[in-house]
Length: 101
Image 1 (cartoon, rainbow, N blue to C red):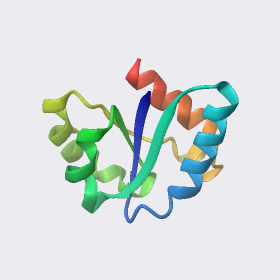
Image 2 (spheres, one colour):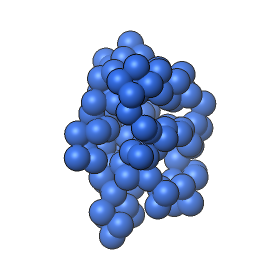
Image 3 (tube, rainbow, N blue to C red):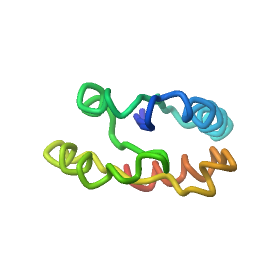
Image 4 (cartoon, rainbow, N blue to C red):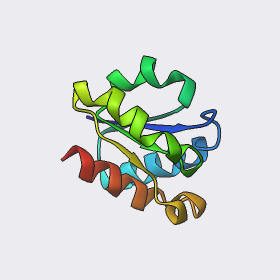
């Protein structure tokens, strides 16, 4: 099972995108666990996932969060702003999976 964490300022703005990603994974028959958290929960939640995607509103935190995730080998990447805004769950899912595989 692929485990994907989305991270934004509070965890609320990514919840719709999580749903779209889960729907896409279900269509493809992919076993995934996708959850959204606020940046304040990063250190507690990040070790439970294989990849972390950041919402555009917290992209300024990428370097710091990537450094914290590095010892565990967990990639931290930014969600494409257009894919985020358009709620393209398929594109964001593909991006996350490419970082895992």
